[in-house]
Image 1 (cartoon, rainbow, N blue to C red):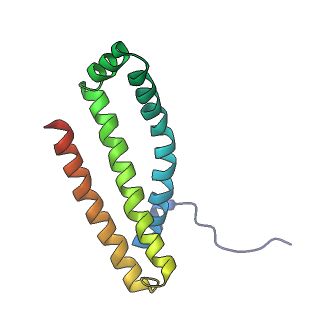
Image 2 (image 1 turned 90 degrees about the vertical axis):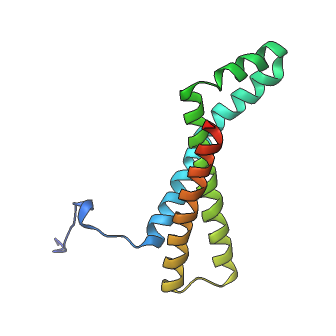
Length: 125
């Protein structure tokens, strides 16, 4: 028996609420943090191995690419932290209603952009 149900394969026509975008971005930043940790762990290990290793990592981190990777790592970490705190507060009870959940998701995005800009200013100044 063939079911006659609508199938929407065009993902651009689907509009998600802010809460869905916040949840998906929280998961994506968690995965990105996992991969960013490879760079961070390598840099820590190399810098602690010897004085020459420390100087090598120090010189490497002055380049644009390394600063961009560090900025990306900080922005991913900051969003994941902001969204994680929001989810923890929701687990305690408040902000579960649709209006307050959407408002806090949007506030989280705004706070994240501010933190990302501040991290960029701090890294490149």
